[in-house]
Length: 236
Image 1 (cartoon, rainbow, N blue to C red):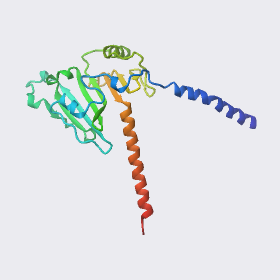
Image 2 (cartoon, rainbow, N blue to C red):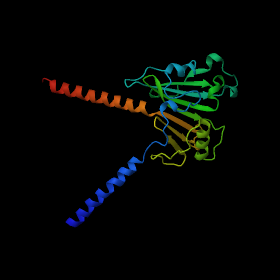
Image 3 (cartoon, rainbow, N blue to C red):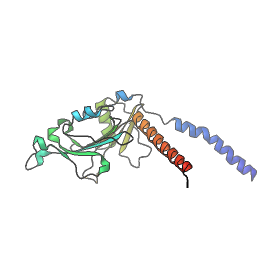
Image 4 (cartoon, one colour):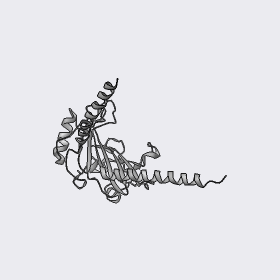
């Protein structure tokens, strides 16, 4: 029995370097920093809220939460398909179909915003006033035979490395990501069963999200300490 246990322990010890080696291999595919992140439809990581709003006149962003996070969602419509095209004054309307947790939400006339041609939706996250997450959902005007074809075109157009990988947490074959030192660019070709779905690109500022995560943890820990102090100071 002792020999069996000893053999099991030796097996675990011998496996440790292999696990460590596997973890060490999970590194960014490219060395590009956040300042070299791509621009998607005129938006790039690190842009201030003011710079973003300057490209979307009529759109506003609500105040950030206690963690410094603010959200913006912009959906588009094609007024040329309407019986009565919208006027300039009505080209931006609040989106009342989304809940308060979605942050600021608007529906805009794509005809009034040339940069949004072929775009179905924008999702943005701002951390401490700077763009740190950008999701661009495109319409189905361009057909893609595969995710490989999509990312090859994206990488070539944006002059990015072609070394895209399938995310570890992915449960399908229609997702790829380019993980760089300063950012992650993810791509998927959408859900073919959802008429509102389409090809997507998601760009994220890794350092900004890591900093906000630390801020969240610090605030939670501070709150716990304060509650503990209150309990200790309680006098029946």
